[in-house]
Figure: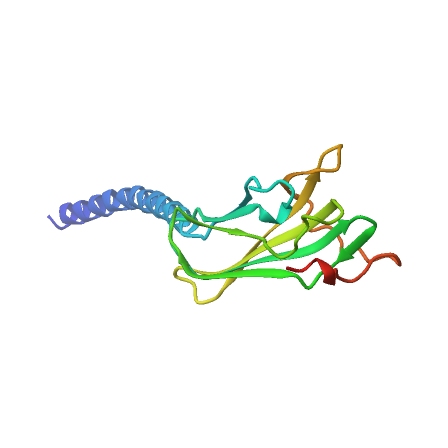
Length: 196
């Protein structure tokens, strides 16, 4: 009888040992699936800001162009500061770099799937010699939901000029991280007479 009981205990232990590997595999697969869902969940909460240029209402004034800053993320963004910074502009024979001209718009919140439209209205180019080229940066500094710190998103745009020398539109500059160019001897640091 004792041998029979011992044989039953050994058989029960063998059955239990066979179940544990199956249970471990199931727990491992479930943990992996939950980790993947968690990673996708975190990525869906990351802030996403889109910056685009529209068509200018006055084709003779490139800086009348409306720019759109859209919150395409799943959560609102807060303490939004939108800056239009003129990096370089060429008007006539003069080339100006790193100008002090900036336009800033501040808004407390942009909800998810919402946008703010503004004009980079810093330089008056109508009535002057036509603009030959320009490079501007739209900088958006904001605090995402669930984050204690601020983050920045930047988009560079260059003026697209047609063969006749007329402004067509602002084109997104994909080479925004190129090295900073140094002004030459014939380039002024900034264009005072062009301010509004």
